[in-house]
Length: 189
Image (cartoon, rainbow, N blue to C red; front, side, top):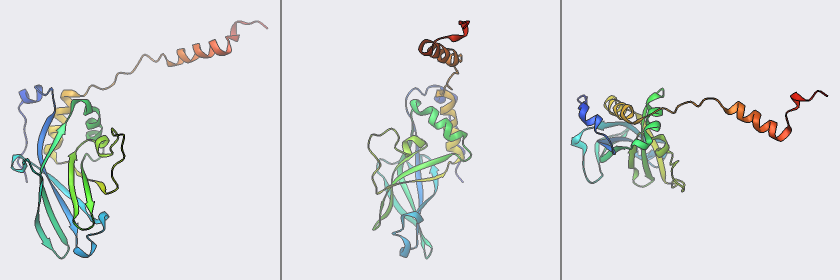
């Protein structure tokens, strides 16, 4: 169990740029005879803390047995951007907030994580003009409580819900209709 993550109020208030949190990803591999089946690989969890900070990504097998292997991948950082606060709020507001692990799958070597995010838009590659490569997959895991608290503080500091308009749409639509078809209510014929 990881220690509770608390951020000082002055740090939360000072966020004007990107926020970063070091994380590591635990990935389970199936038994060797099924290792080429990418559907059997999955993220078992994400752990948080400075002890996982690294400038280089590296994976190490932490458990091996007849049922498969468990790998710990270090060197990842969750990066939050104020412009994506609405996307983060949607993730937090869902039934099951998740962390997404964008990975590359090679039948010979297995799953290698490339990026960790809490943005569904980023995981689905919605902001890109190019489609995700066929050898890339997006895996997900439940969001750890400490990441949820960190993300909630960021969303609170940066997310402004959209305001509803005055509802002029009906008047505008009627005005357009009247201009195109004519206002026949005033004719006495």
